[in-house]
Figure 1: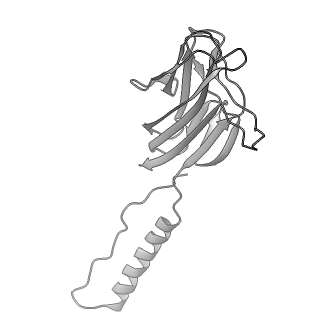
Figure 2 (figure 1 turned 90 degrees about the vertical axis):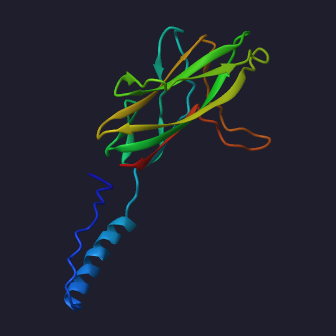
Figure 3 (figure 1 turned 120 degrees about the vertical axis):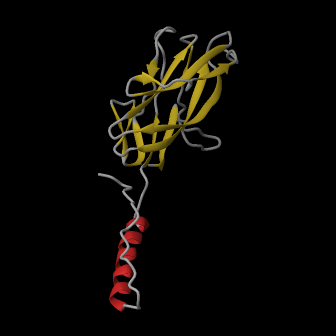
Length: 196
């Protein structure tokens, strides 16, 4: 199903003299067109994860996973990590990851985009994490980025990551008390259609 097939309507040719039938036809065509525009909802979605995401190896790339769909129209998540689209177009993908380092030394986490199983050139970002504050109290920081990418029907995007130490990871935090505050997902990602 396409959400945005909005070609200019075929307007009737004007008659050399005023003709109310021609004017009615013009109004009908424009009314149908603008009714479609008024009901247009661009594809978009928001996804997050409520678990820690850790690495077993520093030489392996891992997909960032999602276990919750906040809302989605025309997009979805497959296999817990593949953000899929059902409409071609250019999309803006944004993410924020809660990064943590429980090591006694500074560490790095790289995060990049992969389309249909292939890394996207020049899409990587490296986030530097200071050493932990103390035993049981890791250093933490948010890594965030947005990226424009053109996708075709049934394409998918993944966020990939790797770490310089298995002690550096993507962490979630439970809801807090004193004061009461919401939980912190390990990852929040949104996708929004920009243009066909």
